[in-house]
Length: 249
Length: 249
DNA sequence: CGCGCGTTTGACATGACTCAAATGCTGTGG
DNA sequence: CCACAGCATTTGAGTCATGTCAAACGCGCG
Image (cartoon, rainbow over all chains, first blue to last red; front, side, top):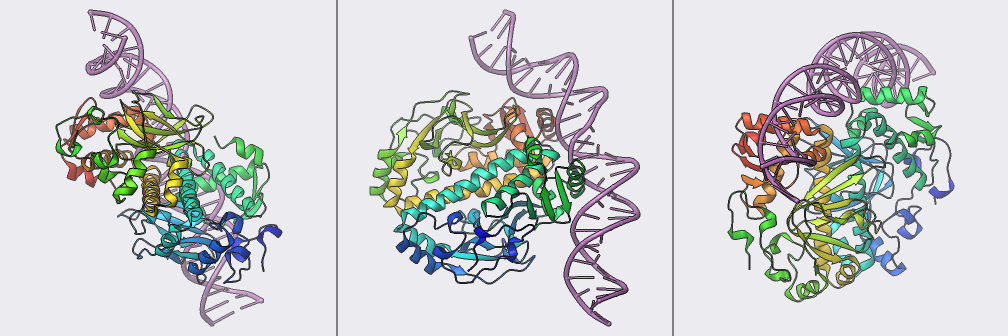
């Protein structure tokens, strides 16, 4: 069985982590980051029973879109996803990037319909949680409900920070903040905080930060010139995280 | 007892709605917009017991700030509030405006600490829900938990739309969207959708939309020149909601 | 009634966008 | 395994939407 926690090679790709398909929550390397945290062993068994460990998604493949019937929420198991909201015209906003252990689709609960689109950024897999069954289970499992609320609240809190970023930060501050956010999340997952592969394109990054692709590209170049980071295509090394932090605003 | 649903005079101010202080949820005019929706009568009594109907807040007064100990989440009872997140330097982002029946403080659940600041925009009052007691109650009241999740999800969904607004919309689209959002929420509360008083300043609106005050002021003037709205200080009349809708992008 | 602050209006500056083109990477089929 | 096609990224030049600065105005509070 794979143990994410034990490996921290350079440029390791989250998608490449081997994952047995029907590994139980209790045995999963993501346990401490994931929904079941704090559940009793008996409860965990019940939760395991409703989880569908779904097939792999390949790069660009949709996990769901606004035209998909809502049945489930998802937890990223391996790889990564982006979510977008789109307007009638072509415009769309990348609302978030999601890594292993993170929930996707929580904003669909209210209307019982997906309001955003989710796409795999690389080879990825998810745990599917049928919402009805999750509700049912929650009735007798207050810990589970608390975990869910906590997750929802966490995303809310992150979204408020993102609003600050979009509304008040300069392009430079936006990109610095973004890089450190990714860095922290890799670190939380047992990977190197300073060397990682970006699974999303420059266009996705730019869109998410409310910038033009060209601006992001120019800033990457500048950060590189200023020796804050090193870039080799999608591989990033943070070489001066302190100075990068000071740029976050 | 007041009945919000029965009165729709012009320029009525939400703060001016009379509210008996210890009115029970079942008797509250906000019932159908509020947390208790769908609870059984027995459950409602229990919920009523943990709710603290707090004193009035006056314009500018803080409901909580990031330095307040987290104990409760709140539902606006009358009036309105704004929430902000702030950076180390003076900058802050207005993350939302909250009207009767809407929750404030949901983003605090995750860290059990307020991550934003909430201030009354006018004379206002709230129902205070001590979080521990709410949790306790939820253990035997799945409907309550579902309602809470639904509320969290709703706010999440609104935040995603706001991200789209901040990241992709033009100044004109932002203001049109804002006006219609306020209009819809007034309407949901039984007030006129077309004539209302803005409780927030131009500065708050500008900040919330990621614009300069001057830009907002100029746009108000332009909308007025174009006969989309009429303005008398904080009183707004929407005179061409169709065209305004078409400007939302 | 007068002061102060919120708002409006005007003139100008600029950060980030758009357009354009060169370069480089990646995946595919021969 | 290589060559090519197509897409992503970078870089440069010029423009524009919106911000900044400055000043007048007027409402509302004390």
